[in-house]
Length: 257
Image (cartoon, rainbow, N blue to C red; front, side, top):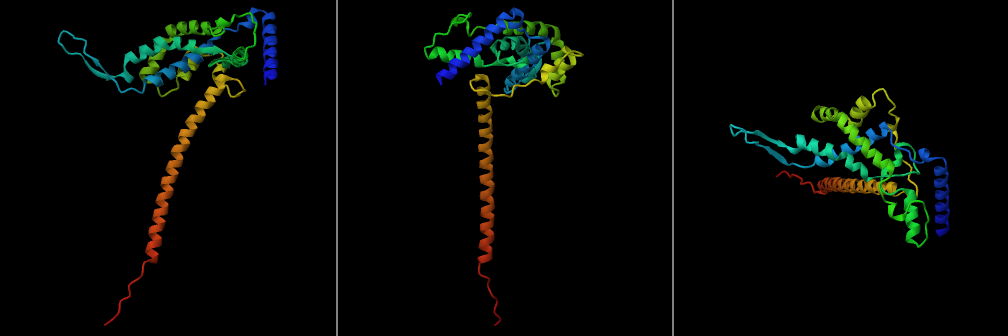
């Protein structure tokens, strides 16, 4: 097992060295406009989903001259919810990591990359791993992710009115389609929006975490389904037993006197 990890580590170091020798432009692959919009919309949808679960009601009495304010409003329909999501969405992007073993927009994902997962595993086993990057900086935000956050700030400032229009009236339409395809990337390359990560390789911590989440959801659904099936089966058995009992009941014969 350790030999396999050493070979894997050696291959990674060779690929890193080759990439660096090709020049910094090839080594640092900054996000493009499509990728920025894709992850902004993904995180925004996630934030709206999270904040949409509350039943909180907000009072809107601002003490006007006549003492009357606007009637209370549900938080999920308020401007406050919109402002909080928009102001914090770019910060959420700093939770992403760079997965250099992946291609296209899939290189941005949450969770530790396969490369650094292997490197951390070797360090934990006492292997002296020597790299250009100091160990203390292994978990620091990469240049690509920092740029993703920076471009997000610009996008939000430029398209805030578009997002607000979606929030106030077009929520039945997918935000990625509305914001990215119809506005930010209109007439431009939007191929990255259809890129999905499906392969699950051994050691890919992000993929493993996602797989566990899906299995947990599937298990919950399965348990609920089996309970429902058991209940239905019991009802059918009771009904069949009643019919059987009726058919076995003695029939009283009338006798003429």
